[in-house]
Image 1 (cartoon, rainbow, N blue to C red):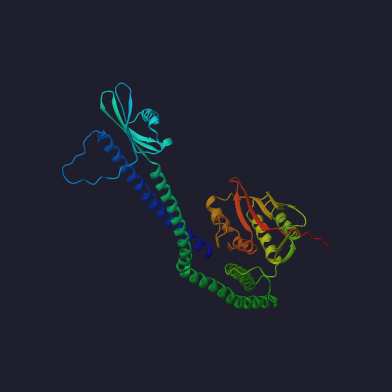
Image 2 (cartoon, helix red, strand yellow):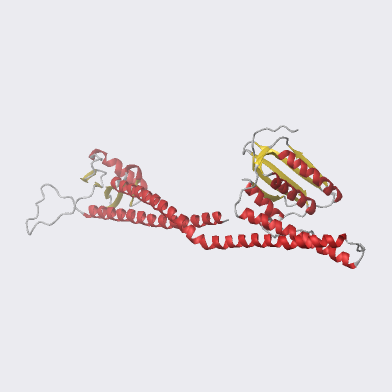
Length: 418
């Protein structure tokens, strides 16, 4: 649980940082692009207003020379009323004067007074000087686009470096942030384990004394005998609860399953099914099994038998009278897993119930509370599956078929039965 909590903290921090960095770099990129666009548009407007200077025109001699702003790479054209096209200024080295008509036609084809010609990396503006007389100003955007592309690459590199740094920082922060939760979780685990362990001794004493009292020569129908029997039953229930809590506390601590070995899961499941066939028959239900032979896994025999017993016991308890219970065990070659499922016909589980079905002490339907139990069986089953590196899920078809499916890692080594 703590590992998943830390992963969520890291994911949340990284998502927030990624959003902030993306927004910052986007604003920077578009503000730079807008600045380039405004600067280029100003050059174009200036080029449209400037009158071309002929070689014979005298240079002003009065006053000191004025500093001249560096010319931008622009192309200025003028189409006369008679259709003649003149090149007034050409500071774009990649464009020949002979091709000027081609670029003027491209600008006319857009149907706009200003805009872009992306295929030629040009930005243009048009101005009508008089009826039939149009002046064109075009600016080369190649350097502008290259600068923006370079900025985009640098932003991506800076973003990647920043995300990497924040990732390691978030790992450190996640440990610091979840430290109080981890301490509380460990205290809770220790409390459950200690309380369960301490309960075992007085329960053992109570059961031993009730056994002795029942063995004495007391009439079986005496009121005291009934009370002692009731005490014995409740003490047994409390002992089962304490054992279940100890098992869950061990699972929470992340301890591996004890005495793991190579075992024949097919034989184990078949034994569990055979044990529950009389139970199902007494309840007026039918239990059928389809078990693939010689499926081997590495695991603890006692725990896996308890897993099978929990699922079959729940199916016998919560299925409808006269219904069919199906248990299936097969190998899935694609995932390299063994699949064990138990399907029963009963009250369909809702989406909310499916999301909480493996939580501790959860009883799905209030009517199911009439059936004895603590609501810990499926929690224990989930813990056993987790210890063995597998997964468990519950599903319902909404009509009445509820299926519990377990996937466990398959060991391909065959086994010979005696």
